Length: 138
Ligand code: FES
Image 1 (tube, rainbow, N blue to C red):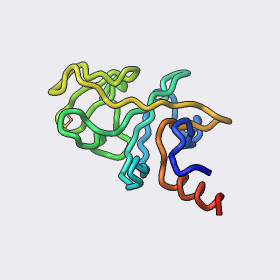
Image 2: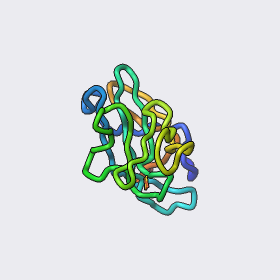
Image 3: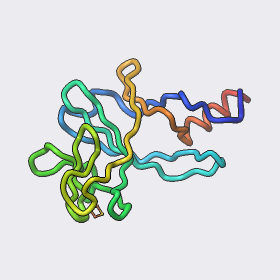
Image 4: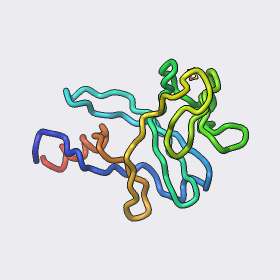
């Protein structure tokens, strides 16, 4: 075992079937930073037909979580991600703000993969898995 986080690790978040088509689900995770500190890591995952998109749940306008009610991330047409605070609209596939006070900015995109039917997030270290890896090394 190495002390450095493995950048290519993939962390299973949920099953693909846990997110209905053209719906979005939020997850409250804890991320391990490079200095070893732990920080809240709130993300959202959108399932759109055969594709999945993941973003950090953080509006570029004022830095708040996007969902004003749990898992309410899509606008009334169900076509774009919306920030519940001031109504900024974001494209599902790119995270770019297409309307609202942060026009032209974008949500921070996550790199996702699917392994054995699970949606996984890559390029981060999550607290529970870091603990499990430490326990495995004992
Ligand atoms: S905080 Fe999101 S649009 Fe203002």
